[in-house]
Length: 247
Image (cartoon, rainbow, N blue to C red; front, side, top):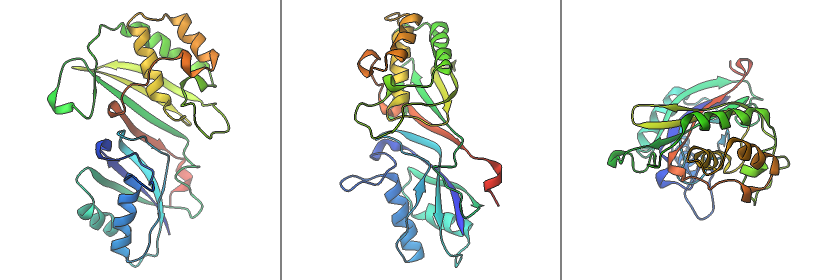
């Protein structure tokens, strides 16, 4: 049977989601725990990567196993063994051909910025105190929906075949003591959200105007865009799938 698990993690102590030869990824932690519980080597497949230091409230992975233990019991036992900064939230049976990565219809991220120093959010939000024009930042964010090629916001060294993404929403929202950038798309390039946020902050500070932001997108030149903001403000918040993959 194949199952989709929902997992949340604080990415501070991990080198991203993906398991790596010389660094600890969240994927490796889960596989080690599953292997101990089931007494055999276990591999999981995530909906996508997150970079080192990036968090997730709703990452998805699929896992196949024979039901000598119920899926909800596997979830329960794994949570008792996983570190405190990793938590399995949910498990659902899916069709055998369902794929956590390739069947995802959209992914959503949030980037959190605190405007005042907060010692309780050191590793979870980006402290940024410069004055910002939120209206201009939202005006620029709307332009993202009019484009498909986002090479300007991609890490230079990447093995993708296309820089095209369909962005469904992109906006800033003022909360009590923070700004939150929301973005949803069918796919994301490596470093894309952090580079977009950095460039939108340039708009908010008045370093570049709306027309220049549009020109940066059209240039397909990473050097033209702004800096990548720190990873600790970024959260993967939702991965959506068609309903017909669930049993």
